[in-house]
Image (cartoon, rainbow, N blue to C red):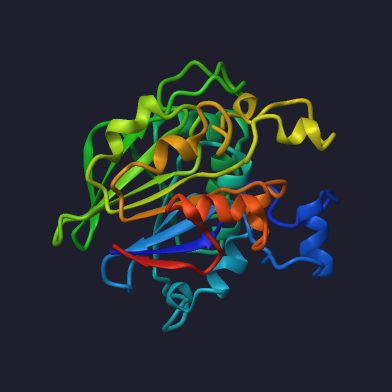
Length: 296
């Protein structure tokens, strides 16, 4: 199984269009070593011919063009088979609208996510006006097959983040995915949103690769920079550092590849020469970058 990182940044990308934080400034003026990043998404394949995309970011067109394996061939035949959604956030779903020129779009999501996209943001209703949308229900904790020996199991990721659409009380509002190559038995977990570690720890058992929420370094990161009044946890994300942070809990796990993804523009791990980057790497963790490919 191959996993290609299409985008590694959180919503807004890196740099973010309206932000002049130290990281965004550095990537614009080249004052410190760092690389621009698009909004988070990965593509998964067992044969490098048929690809399944997890989350359709607003940058999906650029991401496809930057990935030769995902480009169309033989007219308008595309290797992209379906989109699997972890939630209904705009930075994970707006890209669906950019797929409207296709002959149809296959979308996998929980009922809670589908309801938000249909009745809240209206993204599904808008997309259906342009092309057929084939919705495949995702049931947490149930195994499901995709193609070519690739299967998945979604799992619920509890969150107290305020829902902008709907009641926010629905189970399945945020999920992670455990993807398995049936031929090798190896699994990878995609978990770009994680507010707490203990509720999802069992889902990581025996996986070979973990792509996990790396949104903020500190819980009060945005507050300290004067950019927002919310903590990382308020936004549904467990910070990397600090009491109860993800680094201390993930570092001891015997997972061969542990990679932070969905990284906010304010997070200093995006700067190659930062103390925080060194700390992450010293603890056996990696920092995702657009175009990274992992063979599991």
